[in-house]
Image (spheres, rainbow, N blue to C red):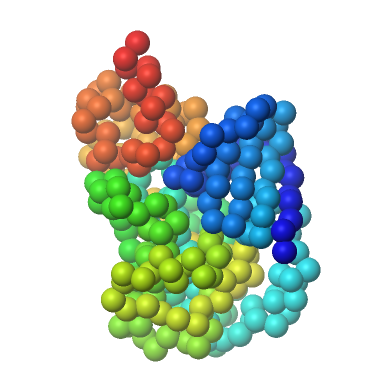
Length: 298
Ligand code: MG
């Protein structure tokens, strides 16, 4: 099924979208700022402010940026699968942030700890402020079986030479489940907040020695599945702690995201510590790097 979704995105969301799929950039058509062609979807951001998602997987790529929730399909699965217990869920954090690591967490929620999630008010980490994340996450980490992968910037930049962001995410999610399986019995029902088509996910794992199969993929899963919500909170917490360490190490504050404040921050960093230090704190393939370079060459 081919479809087209048109969205009007805020500049910071355009930037986020661009950074997420930058590896798939192609020549932009007339009147477009840029065009990206990841698998089964073409994303075109026009100067008019409209962004078009076209193709079989338009829904998957547009979902994180849509205000109106769920398609009909999603509603159907909501009633049938979201309350299955036990469930394992995984989510990642930091892929849209220029500074800091990428973190993936997978965890298990069952009948015995579902109430804890309700008590702590755990849900999608994007909807909880950082102060609350710092309170809730340690509670979850005491009670839920979880595995956590933190890819620091040096490692990220190296791995990114051979893996695009989607491949990297696929391999990290798989590894998180592999590690989780060593700590606890994996439930039959496992869900990933969908960032790629199922077929591509498994294709990206063709070199990995152990692959966890039977995963359910769904967009906006962090809102619907307690295990994905909890995973996103733990991942966000680990990201915040990693940022604390970086800030302590360099004695400066790092901005989150990838917008203009981040450009200014990157410039400050480079003027203080030199460009050659940047790969230790930033994801170098982001557009922000070019902007810094353009400024310091002036
Ligand atoms: Mg996610």
